[in-house]
Image 1 (cartoon, rainbow, N blue to C red):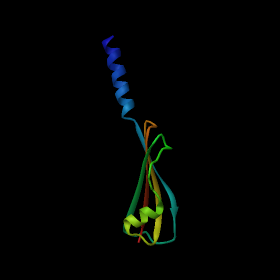
Image 2 (cartoon, rainbow, N blue to C red):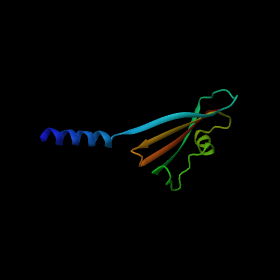
Image 3 (tube, helix red, strand yellow):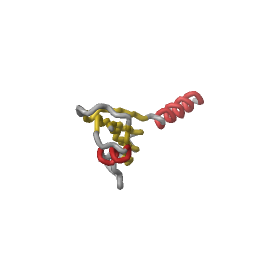
Image 4 (cartoon, helix red, strand yellow):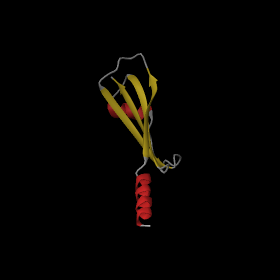
Length: 93
């Protein structure tokens, strides 16, 4: 019985630490890839509840001081389907 309780506790702990992160390319232009990188992040709950969050390309470019955008990537992270984080990553000059 003790082994069963330990196994259940271990499985619960492993489940609580489960998360997934995925980075996808969104857009690319003919501009040369510059050395500047800008990011913008939006965090929310259940993938739909975001309060005052802005992960726009415009905000990421402004944060990196980028005027000529080369590439745009989107990184999505999800923890147990409860916490969701989107990060827009812009590179350019």
